[in-house]
Length: 436
Image (cartoon, rainbow, N blue to C red; front, side, top):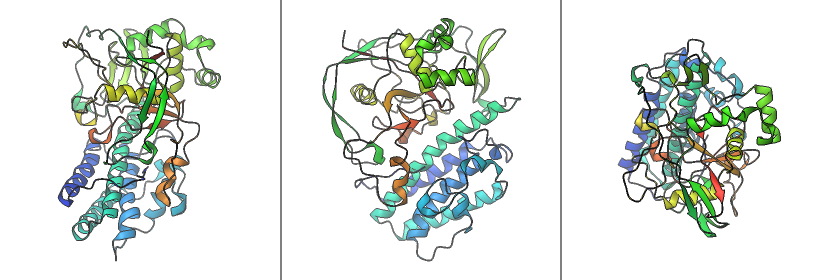
């Protein structure tokens, strides 16, 4: 699902690009190492895709947008793949409906892997021959597109394994021993921000998606934002106070979803005789009360915030707070940590505590609808199809999650989903008006 850049980027020397290309392509294969051919065929719902399809579609991007357009004499691996693995690019022709991707028993997984090798060989040959600014721009776009699908591989296979009555583990060799008594989360504190005009959007010369641009001034009233994410324990208090049965806490459409789908807890939670448990990438585990609550919809996040006497931050407030806290991906819980599960906030020993979990752990719902920034213009051609045409009926999430690649996330990154969706690693951070 590529997104595009509206301005030039600072380009690295070719060897760096080639190394980055190889590393990201290898990371994708690493994510499916524990999966058999049958696992990679499963599509558990229309929102998800089989792992085999992710492997093929990310390869299709490099073939369709780079090799077919810029490598003279290139012969496609299979002409039919241009249609089969197109996700939704209308300007590139027809494509299968996403809900039937799990029916693609052919090509086989072995053929898809050969397709990846074939395209990788051609890409390396092209980059050695020619590394124009336009080609390198498209390579960077393709690599960021693949990193988005790396995240989706984990979220989709987690849902697929959860729907299996056997509840298999995605990471069977990495099952974590849970302590008998989990450490309580640090006290929730509030960080205050004065009213003013703040600059929002990407401010670097490096890669950014078009929906992060243009950078623009935004007026904000005084606000407060929580120092950490909402925990499982706090969400259990909402549930114990009949949060799922009180219509006054829910938006109208949200209440319809609660009733129609019989929501009583976050996705992957299950109440057993010995207490609440949740399904994770390491199988079903006891619920850790200090961990961030995860796999909640915007509707649930909004209802919890109302119950707590707070609200969700706007995406501009979130970005201002994240920039002020000088977030670093170095210590954040992201894909490369190979935990694939949100971790508790830690007790700070510093005299000057900082905001925690702004990057990684869970995507944080904001109260902002996904719409264009002032002055936004979608790029021309097929590249421009992704962002602009989806700026409707969706809500913005910020900050990345425990399955977001480290080099992929930043403070200005805008993710977005329909408000009822729960299979993404999504959670809650609270905010308040004023600076009391």
